[in-house]
Length: 286
Ligand code: AMP
Image 1: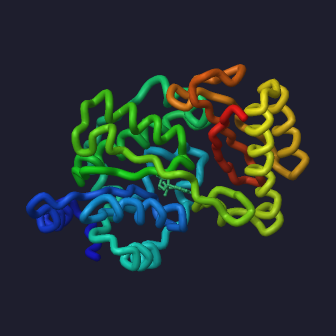
Image 2 (image 1 turned 60 degrees about the vertical axis):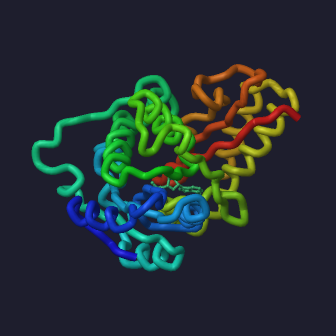
């Protein structure tokens, strides 16, 4: 595996990979890799000739009071994991390579960016859309892989690819991968390492309460009541607050009062200590 940090080196390395009709998959990450990321890489490897992974802690998607400085950075350890998984190329630009002096462009996706995490984190999804648009143009992958863990992010990226008529990758080649979880159900996240042992134990209440709410709603229970019970359970388990707990249409992410005939999703963001955790689950009629 080659690690490249400049656009020029990236282009040279990509030219060597893109011979004949060889296909390239992209797995964008912010590093501090875990089994969730590696699952994306394995899916990518199964579906393309070469996998390009990127590691870039994108300042544009962090708010002023968020954890940009504290976000874990471990490039050497991440590179070793990616190499073991058979990644061909690691694109690891620094901030100046991604956003050279004079950078002024912003990619903003209305609608799906606005509620949920977009409401709690103003500008976050503009930062995501801008950097992912750049990563797509830099690498020009045939296919790209993202986790359903960040369900709203996946919707934003798909809307961007559709609206901007992207071809590398085409919107239909933006693949969502189901969330990879710890044994107790907690969704794997680079931010889980912020949790103290007590907080980590309490955090298992999040997927548990979500499963209960999803199955109650799927079984016909009133959504507002099930969501309120879930919030109460989270607070009782030691969560400090619930940013949102919403039943939404899986495609538009518009909030729903009740389960209809279209696919629905339960989406939650909740804080435990200083750490904000997000998770989501499909809600199916029982
Ligand atoms: P991040 O490094 O947190 O920006 O994540 C990089 C990619 O990995 C994103 O597409 C995430 O949705 C995905 N990802 C993160 N955690 C998980 C997980 N537990 N399961 C599946 N995908 C994940």
